[in-house]
Image 1: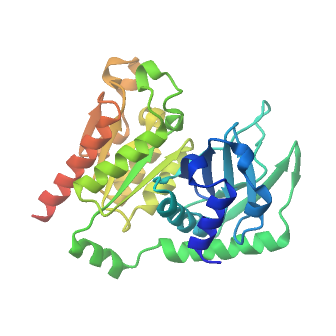
Image 2: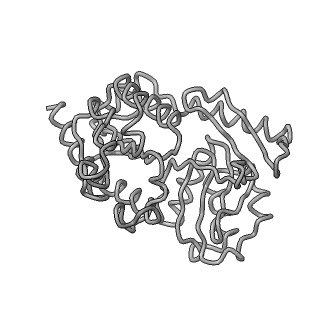
Length: 312
């Protein structure tokens, strides 16, 4: 079954386009928010080739677990069918009061070492394992992802000559809670709204591609920055709380040497004393603060101008 047919069957199994409110994609999961979750045909989704699991997310959400090489391809076809943009990169794991994962499947993969991975299925406090055939399927997907995601030197050079830059937008901890977290400071718009703004702004500024990535984990953010080397031409980064603590993010930005702009939704210079320190700032060409989500648009436009000036 090809990716387009898989996406079509997923859309049919959730009750059609009219039942879809929002979607996003993380490393292995297609996350869907539905108007009426009772319309889901769970058996039909679970039986699709490439689907490793299905989990509920809140009252109106589901997560369809694919392999990392599959989920982005299927989500792209899904977006074509629905006309709703996929916001990529959110990675979070729900836990119970003891800190144990409540997801039926948790796949943790280092972006820098895709062949080194851990698969953990948890039920209550007793670990369980995936069937051997599912492990073999995931290994194959990881191999395909590794081949597909690493651009060759020739591809990188060709991209630069053609003048179609690619943009990476990185968001740190708690930004997935936009609209819920302290709305008097961060506003009432959601993370999905932020992704949509970045996609539109990047397209308007002349970027050929934009990837929006969010994680609550410092190491994952470092991995994402490292993975941008030879793959992306500019980075917008809101490290959130890691702004004030992470030398690791600073070192990663310096290592890849990609033009970057630091963004903050709130006016950090008017907040607590500990927020006055930014470790990443010295690796960025500019800092945008206090403009709300529109700060991302300014950062994207400024990066586009910076790249154009560098070429000219």
